[in-house]
Image (cartoon, rainbow, N blue to C red; front, side):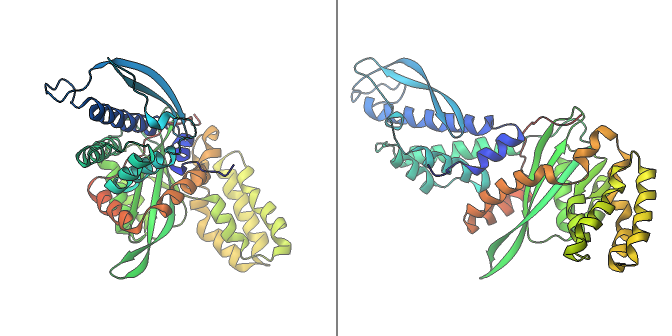
Length: 373
């Protein structure tokens, strides 16, 4: 069987809270069933009309297992005859259409075309265009409310990772940066706190994004972990007043690029000696000693070590139990892979919509997850 999972569902599940997606899916299916029953009865709930053909008679509960999780549905019952939603029939292929609607809503706002495809896939041919429009509004409202939720409490650690997408702007294809941000609160819980798309990685771009997080309640940040992006370090100092930790994994790749392949294992082992020290003073002493040993053979590597010592070893000033999670953006790698997949599948015109929406309504990807205390 081919893999056909929803990348966004995986993304949120790994970050901790896939419940939001399942709650939206439940609401969508519930609204579709209500509209379908209304068409069969010939009247809305509590409506008095001579065209009524039947009456409602409560609900029966049903669990539907999907890629978004187990959905708890309330299937309407009729006074005469019975009602069974077509999408619950065995081997019905409507689930793919459902997750497509939810994914598109998350990324940039759901379209009526997507909902039309969902209705057709579910075999609900009697759904009116006004119901489709109402469903679109309901989904967007639920997603927007979720994205705009405020952040509360202290968030001492923040990870930022960036991926690049190609987007059409003014008749030409340009590269845009998509940022995903994960923060850790004082209780050790990690949450996705932001997803933002912008035109560049200049300081103004980073400052705008960080200010949007602050406006939503992000505070108490002591350390920001990221790769060496242009303008980010200055934006962190100006907006958050926090220390910057350069991603150690990415730094190692850059460092070993100055070494021949045959000697990379030896050089890597030498560089890692600094990371094995129990405190920051020991790490700095070892770092400088290793730099002096390596610079004679690889002067560019020695200079890189001189220039980046403070940034690569910043995490050593924080509690030892926290350090394994603080030296790199690796905790975001799988999350960003899922976000990149979702964004890449989103039409470029809708990415542009997300760009504009992000500036005015900074998105919140709040997903509690188990973190390291």
